[in-house]
Image (cartoon, rainbow, N blue to C red; front, side):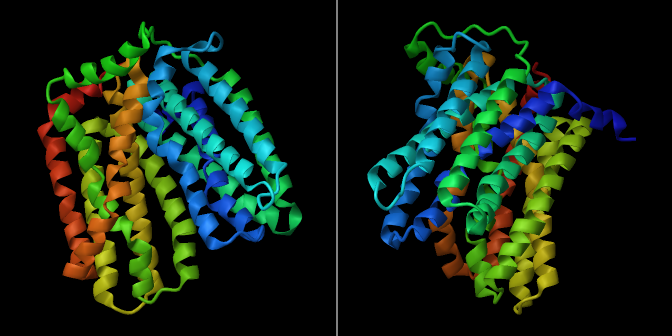
Length: 413
């Protein structure tokens, strides 16, 4: 029955989206959780390690240099793959350079290399997002989003959990990072073998045009501000529910190990299943129905945490149910949301527009934390999760309001 829907996964474009998703996710933990473990083993104090969390700032500001990617294509491998290749080579060399240093005796150089890794990684993200948007056909966006998330998550496990295992008795930290550098270098082969987008693109003639025209073109569209509100609001309820979830579960009496296992095992599996299920259902339902149905499921599954709150005492079965349901719906919603962002991009300015839209889409995840804290104090945990479900309603109403626009976007390319 579903064989015709599953067939979309069987082509070079989808394969490239998955493997480049892996390339995109691999450097993240190397400047985040894995790096913190290395610094801790090296004997650095908590204040210094805390300052190192700032090395990830390029991920937040990547939209500032995304116009350069649109304006200046490399003279090889097409408009996008040349930039991807340069980013990957730079990442492999920088990670290898970091592997040759002792963070305690070369702290400043070590920090500079960590910032460079984050910068090259953020640049790679910009180009891979643009490439995926251009290379996939309209009926492949859901599948491309799902496999991209899958590759990204597998890469985070590789540079996160697997790197920690390697460094825990099998290899030194220096050797572990050298292995990661080698793995990053092999991603260049994937870039060489990835297909070139078939779209004929007219690139910006000047840097000023590359900066101004993407904004001018987007805001010239009918209902542009409402579209931006949808981008921000679609997963806002999810962002509220997840912003303090670990603190909530600790307050409910669950142990750290149980919480970690629930998220890392059940949560990850549910997210991946949700992503692929969302992709298949999108082929059948289209973008509008998928956004609406997945959005309703996202809001409804937030109430799993409400059930935990009113239950009072720790119940592992209830915990696993709530986390699995929330991540399953979240995986579906993420697939539809990424497909929406791809459909909103003009092919002439894909890198810049996608970088800006994805920054707006992450607005809730980054900034709702303080508001969540005040809401919990004012309402209590149970009522907070009811409110998080209600916060999703405006986003769903925007989906309904923009139905004709979304259906037109679904037919692009």
